[in-house]
Length: 332
Ligand code: HEC
Ligand code: HEC
Image (cartoon, rainbow, N blue to C red):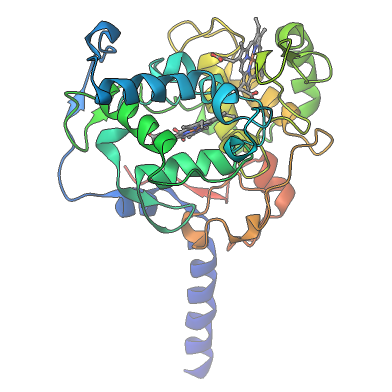
């Protein structure tokens, strides 16, 4: 009897350990808002000519400018030192293409309608301002914008204007990233050596052999082609630093000219090149306290390369895969 209960205990603990991996179903449950979201198909951006000549319209236009030419207003090279909120010379637009209107490019069409929301990175309910500041401190390697300052209000006003008519909580088709083949990522690790070949053939012509891109002349003018590694790009806390997330973005957006409907790379190439640009020998600014991200390891992003984890896989496997035993797929 005693042996039996010990076995039950052991099996119980074992199943708890495997349940500790990234649980897609659990994340979906925590994201549940208690109502069925409307699905918006065929979204198209509103006509900019309809932005009114009012104070509201001025904020919307300023918000759009901040997103497209971030470096010019809040970048590290602007003349007014107090305005240097971003720590690199990227623009939001470098990842949220076409001012957040390009589909499958982490667009902003559904953003205003979908906050507040559960955020696994903080394990709390986050606002749209929190989310913008998340990218400010990670993708832009900078400081948070004051929440009631003009810049934050302007970006939120632009997202509000862009999302006009989108019902609250709606799923807008093309507002999230596509997913590279999940069977592939479960069964094999991303291969930075294969990724180097992809990089040389498809990326280096713009981003450079050294990944430093091409900077425009003059101060606070940003990049013609943004850097992918080095000190003037996203930091190690950014989504783009994570291999699966980067692969999902790259497949529908790079090389320049690619879209989700007109992909240029295969899933395998996107996965491998994502590993290449984020490999250990490609330095990025360090995000402090990364071990505090995803405080609940059950919903911790599978491709986060800093522990703690509640599965038994090491950092290296979390960074590059294979993700079998790390991701628990949602039950159908
Ligand atoms: C290096 C790339 C990169 C840059 C630069 C960047 N972001 Fe992001 N951003 C991302 C990624 C990746 C996501 C997550 C997309 C996903 O998981 O679907 C994201 C998500 C977001 C979201 C959440 C959108 C939603 O609807 O859930 C907001 C808001 C956002 N970013 C705002 C900004 C703003 C504002 C800037 C500039 C100040 C910026 N980002 C710069 C990569 C970037
Ligand atoms: C023809 C030029 C060109 C080629 C080739 C190209 N890119 Fe880009 N890339 C760009 C431009 C321009 C942007 C910024 C997009 C924007 O602002 O709309 C960008 C943005 C990016 C970003 C997000 C911003 C950043 O700095 O991290 C990543 C990641 C990226 N490219 C990866 C790649 C990869 C991987 C390849 C090869 C598979 C590739 N690119 C090929 C021009 C190019």
